[in-house]
Image 1 (tube, one colour):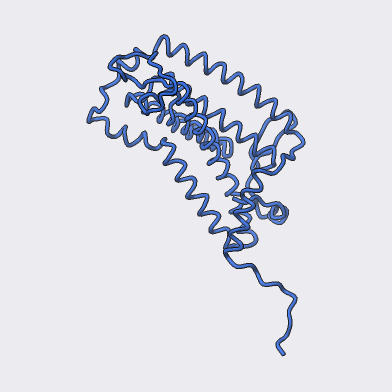
Image 2 (cartoon, rainbow, N blue to C red):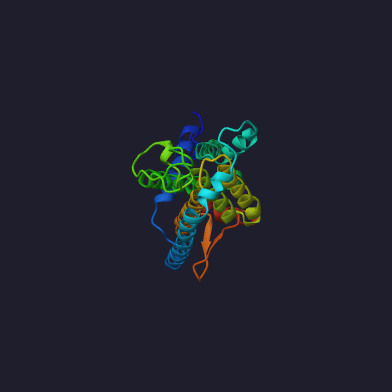
Length: 281
């Protein structure tokens, strides 16, 4: 008779993939467990309130005093020499950014499902960070789309005039979807999220976001107040998602004063400890 064994066979790849995907969803909806989440929530509320108040005041000032002047200084829409700007601006398009993040996130899950031990743990940690980036952009864009529909601000020169007060609420077309700027929302949500995880990239990421913001003005896709509002929505959205992750001990830690800081990635000396509660992508 063949010798019996007590070692259970390793689950196949489909089962491993389902496990990874299940953990990815479970970790996001589990109850918050961080003991300092109340302090972090209060700090988030204060910062969001002050940022929103300052941003709203700046939007109003720009709308009244600067929007009309700025769009009249820009080259005509469709000017042939603007084609490099038209290409550059697509790096802030929400569909493209979310598609890239989604593809990378799925790829990490597919690869991690076929690994074990240290290599899987490292990929799972990276996957959690990718989740944060994706959800920061996705939530911000979702909120922005609702605001666009409710506000219904006309884009520059819609209606034939440089009228910064051309509003048709609930109109629902692209011509009246100027406030806030979707590209600015995406670029600043991504810039804040990446900087929150990897602070050394802060200058690079916010330079990228500002460049995207400027392309929207040069192309006459938005007024200055639109891009400022978009930057505000993007950053507040990413801040809210960061709190959600920190409260569940995912990728972030909370200090005694409520400050949220990034957790370091797993290193060899801690991998066994991390593996016990590894986060899935």
